[in-house]
Length: 330
Length: 264
Image 1: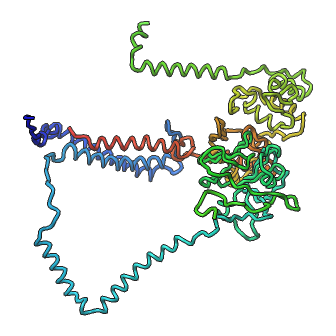
Image 2: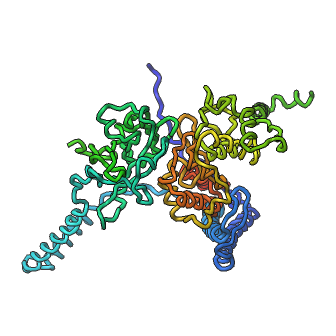
Image 3: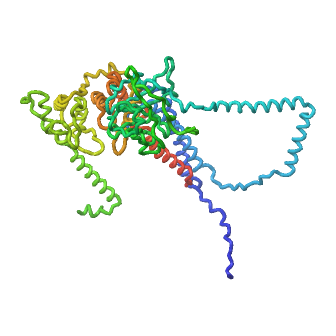
């Protein structure tokens, strides 16, 4: 226990190593030339840019290996500007690294707190100036100023109102009502059951009331995929089976996971796939989820035919379409 | 021999050997996959196209599809599939099948146009089905509408075949092939018959005129110039992101290393 620990001594700064250009005038000359050449390269880039803008036709294409056929106008505009800017930067950095003064400077940290007399001086100045402004003597100015400053603060609060209004039950309603015809999308033609062959599909939208325009907001909720398979291939309960028509079954195209359009239909496996996250739905079992992140089956649209033989919705969707949201089940 | 003993411990020897072995394996596979072209049938002694087709069928197709195209354990029945289906499957080389795995892929056709026509005539004679079309019949340049075709493609085709028609993956090794460079008649017949996993788009769901619009859009997309040069497969953010991250970030790292390196 007699051994005494000696604290490590401060090794100090390592010895300064001079750069080649600091000791050898030849090397300094060479470095100077390098920096100059870099600046000249930038000049070349700017000239290329100007030439591309003035001299190369907007529609001229050239063939480059790897890139293929490329628009020459765009290519040389971009390349010229890139070269011009890059080499200015490179020249500046190279200049600073090899030629600019190289002596090491130590700048110690300073005390953060101001000196006492400076602090006292500041307080005195504030007191003096506020007395000079005479707010105590002119109460009208003081009050109107406070009023205006207070009111101006209300305006941004008012703008928050644009975050609303709340959607209400918008998310739970679609344009599908009892008796709404199924129209091809695009084309807007009504569909007869005989139009769909076994193995066939159709992208459909609801027929809107005369004069009503279909907005993207409507398509985002109303899109439906119609699929026909052999009726004996269905594996449905009686209620869901009554929602189909001669092997034709209709599902909301909006994925119950994140709302992508689910329309990758494999005729051989009767699987419906979402292209975004690979949720897979089994058409024969009412779009039951058999793979992927989706939490529930795609909503099924009950369909039948009207007196003229066109496919119509029997009832609206029995549940909200699309991804989950708060109070979905309320 | 001295050459081998000299270089066998070289650091590139193992990777090169592996590459060579892989190349050889690939070569053997593709050689085995290629179906040998059958001798062209002589025309003179065949009375009708159907009889000729029946003959070709018996030789080349009946082992899977049954001697009367009634279907067997391996291949489905072809009664009622129509000439359109035969023309699509055989003229794009998908039939006869060389590789019976998940996807029956496009390859060099085994039969020439005349033999395909004979086969189609024979299968069409079994039961009515969609008729084959010829490129000349399809006046897509005149009757198609590119903008309408684009809307139809985005709504009906793009989820499987990619927004730019480059094709995409399906489940369990299946894929939707690219539609670039496909003959107009085969595009038309594919929509009409729904080959493999593809659903059917009947003439009332996608009218003949709408099908021509789809073809016109596809042909337009084929000739779309790549303004930025390399199109990177036109599959969107995957290849673009890969390039941006690897090349762009690599470049930035290089610059950062140079910036902080001490000058000598």
